[in-house]
Image (cartoon, rainbow, N blue to C red; front, top):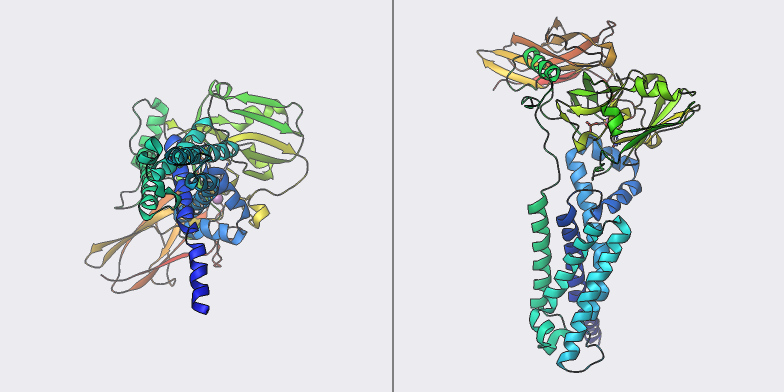
Length: 513
Ligand SMILES: Nc1nc2c(c(=O)[nH]1)N[C@H]1C(S)=C(S)[C@@H](COP(=O)(O)O)O[C@H]1N2
Ligand SMILES: [Mo]
């Protein structure tokens, strides 16, 4: 009795499995087709789903992903969004897969052909329509539709579609399911092959662009010359610049359509186009950025030579009447802080002699001297002046990262020079307070000496490198601490990044090798 009932249940479930497999394959191909057509851009069908995933994620998870996992966290989150999108489009393709098995109103071969055709058409049009609803992009929707449609087409097989042959379509056999899965993988692989992962490579500042302005060339050369000659240590202008974004797909803002408005508590609401900004005198500044989520000895701290126009030039015209400001980005990111901090800022649209990369906020981003990275809003679209306080994106999620940075000395490089000689080195940063000294202890904190420092680069908000060479007989602890331009020592108490930035002194144990 029991046995036969189980068999009955299995028989009832079974026919649905190939159907779902085909639909899911069509869903994957829909995502792959969209990716093939537009790449990792806002029009990609997984972008809106990614936003929903992030909005729905608990703050602790988002914090963990950003502070502990970095790029890996982004990849995992993005893969999750892609998987969910494939399921969504699998559902959109399901009616097509069901219809594919039907015979239509006519009996015989033409009935089979008719059912298959209706299935393929439904499995193309429905996912396409859902894609258009999500992205409003005809190209992305066409790619989505084509991907899903192709899978259903392959599932049906040309023999059925052309001649109505093979009356066995009613049950989707293993061969058909394999065809569906195979074609879905094919479309996705082609998308990846053609578009890559969509992660931009950072143009190294070590290669000064041919067309760089003489002032930029001079500054980048100066940064190269002033960088300490330490094997393996990043130079004064970063060769790779960290990236922190709330979303996994960056906005793609067309500079010809971009505008920046200054709104809210202002005497005059003003709007700028890119050409207006480009028409103003260009200023180059070395500026260091550091994320409040950066671990004490982490890598979310970098420096570039940025070019743009002082915020002051634009703010003056609007004549702000409030003492707070919210900067808005095209990704719906926003951050709030005292307007006082913004006045000396820069609206940058070039980085290391090249147009600002999309990953770092093209066409225009804000650079706010001495403050944590988060208020340096990328893809800037609006400066909203306010007369009362509110919370920004991260503050809303429990961070306090709108203020000035903490002082830090990183220990990024340990070189064993041989015969018991060691070289330790790194970068130190204290925002607009500047770095006056970096002190090193190679005996676990008993004695301290001043490290050698790189000659300062021009600029109010830029890091310095430090280096120290010494001899040691066995395993020992190296501790570093910076002293800022006011003579204040880096905070010794150890604390993690959340909510207001990591504190403590970096300690590394150096073993003999
Ligand atoms: N529009 C927008 N601006 C943004 C962010 C963002 O997610 N969206 N991230 C902020 C954070 S938390 C940091 S640390 C810096 C990082 O700048 P980078 O990615 O150029 O290094 O940008 C800030 N500006
Ligand atoms: Mo950040």
